[in-house]
Amino acid sequence: MDIINWQSILESLLFAAGDEGLTIKHVAEVLEVEELKAGEIIEELKRVYETDTNRGIMIVQLAGTYQLATKKENATYLKRLVDSPNTSTLSQAALETLAIIAYNQPITRVEIEEIRGVKTERPLHTLMSKALIKEVGRAEGPGRAYLYGTTKEFLDYFGLKNIEELPALPDRVEEEFVQEEADLFFEKFQEKMHS
Image (cartoon, rainbow, N blue to C red; front, side, top):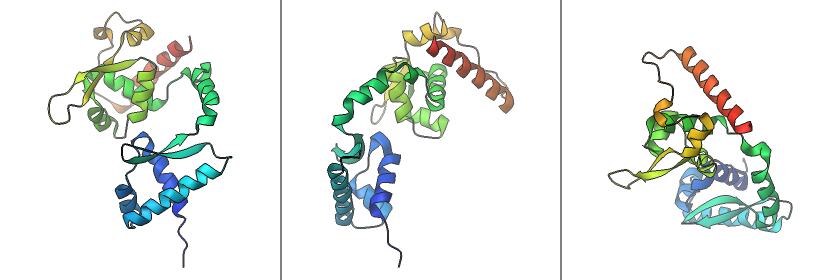
């Protein structure tokens, strides 16, 4: 009979869920166990993190969800990482998200995710922390989602007077052309970030 390593699976699930975290109900559904059993698995893994001083992460419960977080004892080193000049570059995901916002603003996170086809919570957080985007209002309708737009810092990075100076998107899009344009855009952006 196979032994299921629940802690390993839960760790993977929490890592994949990122900042959104998981509720006990969601964990139970994915693991196909009762909520009581899911709670026990979460508590077991939580204890492992708390008692093993060699681990740098822990499980926290925020707003009814469980998520992975870094241990407070390592805050000094995390601050150095954030302040390090090597961390000033943006990931491909952040660059794609920035381009979508620049050309479609104001835009909600859900609309960005529909275009990209993947979650954009982290890229949005990164772009906001670098002051390249900001919340510019709320959408009409249920939930009143935040609308995102670019900032003055975004314009400064690209040497633009206003958003209308962005290069026009082609009417007829050929995949090879789009990839070349995207590569050029990202290359110029990375140069600006390093200078």
